[in-house]
Amino acid sequence: MEDNAGMPPRAESAATAEAPAAPAFSPLYQQIKALLVQSLQGGAWQPGQVIPSEVELAARYRVSQGTVRKAIDEMAAENMLVRRQGKGTFVATHAEQSTQYRFLRLTPDDGTPPALQRKLLECRRMRAPAEVARLLVLKVGESAVQVRRLLLNGSTPVVLDDIWLPGTAFKGLTVERLQAWRGPMYRLFEAEFAVHMIRAEEKIRAVAAAPEEAGLLHLPLGAPLLSVERLSYTYGDRPVELRYGLYQTAAHHYRNELI
Image (tube, rainbow, N blue to C red; front, side):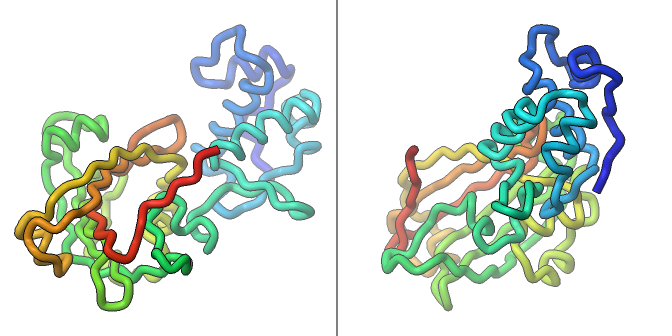
């Protein structure tokens, strides 16, 4: 799918002019990367869709194929794009089986792939609490959507999530839409709200189960839990989801690969 946005008359001058706030000394491949990110932000290529080839992009931006490749390599390393041998380069999506649990690092102790079922508890719109507004960079009094849900392994609750989303970006998100959706929640965000989760930061600590959480997770009061605070970002490093998760680890562990 072709997109004519950002077609420069000359590589160095136009790429610098069109890349938002790009400094004059920015390396050329970074300027091309900025133009590609701009196209992703503008919806030129949708999640899961193939982007033009390196040869096509090099001709479009009037730069070398190596410059385009370096920009794409960096975007692939940042999980914005996915290379597939013999097929091309695709916009990253949470729809694929291999990426559905990219941000969820809770793994069964027996080594089987995670296969958790959702149970929606509530979805409500309200004024963002002060800390939520601060982390999501919302104005004082701006609306937010709170989603509370359980993730279950069979009939056993494993995760209790409190998810906060900017109200404006998720206008129209309701209990009914969440219950009707059968795929990953992040795929719903991509498909119906044009919000693409690119990366996330987490803070993890050990806590004791309070009465309400213990009841929802079917645990005794004071049982040990893993508290995971996750802030997820879209293009332009804009925070678009704050998630407070409580993980019970009787038969699961938190797994992270360090490279």
